[in-house]
Structure formats: C-alpha cells, structure tokens
Length: 225
Image (spheres, one colour):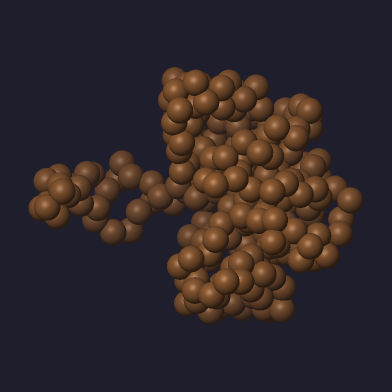
C-alpha cells in the first residue's frame, strides 16, 4: 500500500491580513506548515508528502521542511488547480490524502480513521456535526428553509480518495470546465459516494489572527505546549 499526502499551502492568506503567508506564522514555536506536515510525516502509513505552495514561499518552505520524503509543487490560481498540479507529479499511488495546510492540529487518530474508511469505501472525509442551526436564505437574505441539523456535518480535511477514482474525477471536471472548492464535490460529481468520518472540533482551520491564540490554547490543553 502506497499513500501520498498533498498538503495545500498556496492560499493568499487575505483574511489573515498582511503579505506574509499564514503558513509561516508560528503556533507555539513552530510554523503552521511545519505542524501540518509533521502530522503526516510521523505516520508510517504515509509514504510521500507533496506540499503545494506559492512560488514566493518556496525557499522558506523548503528550508523549514528539509525531509527527503517532502517535495514541493507551485500552486495554481484556485484550490482545485493547486491539487491538480500536485496530482500531475504523482506516477501512481493507492490512496491520495488531501489536507489543508491551514489545519495544523489534525490528530493521527483522525487521519487513520479517515484512511481506514477510504480503504473500505473508496472515498472518505473527516468532519464534525454542526453546532448551530443552519438557515437557507434567498438573494434578499430572507430565510427560506431550515435544514435538519442532525443531517448536517461540517466537512474538514483530510479528504482521502482511491487514486484512480480521483484521477477519473479530475478528467470529468476538466471536460466540464468545473472548478470546485471541495474535493468531495469533485468526486460526488462522478457519481461516487463519499463517506463521512466524525473527527475532532480541535481540527480548526487557521484563518484569522484569533485562530492562532485558539490553536495555542488547544495545544496547551493537549499538553503539547
């Protein structure tokens, strides 16, 4: 079994403010990208790691991540294109693990549970039950529907796919000219089912400055800081 992890770190970090990539911000003495990559590099189930980054961050990323099992790819103009750029460098693997570099607190347990389910069903993604009531609105911000909260899940990453299934989904997306912000949707459009795995609320996405403090609090709670 050969598994490849793609860690996405090519976003422009607009909501964080400033020109510096949020991947290079530090949480408890380590950068966001270091923590995200280490979550996978410490696992024997992961054979190869591809980090997707902006060209302007390549030197900094490569200095932070000198491990020979980590390679780098320049990202595209969208999330989907960044994943495609990485996939094009892969000769072949069994399972493709796609993870947001901005989720540095993902646990080995969550990764393994999701990988196990993907090996069972062909495609799986981790997520958590939504805590809030969700409303559907129209173009004028009028509430038009209230979905049953028990049937909703907030999808996170990793999202893990049989490699051949995912490459078929890529071809369909290219043919139809579609661009998705979520890899599950890419595979769903192929007609394949994606299994949801209940993960961890601590698997937060670093988006704004306040998330740095929250992440450090989570690490303290875990006894890792």
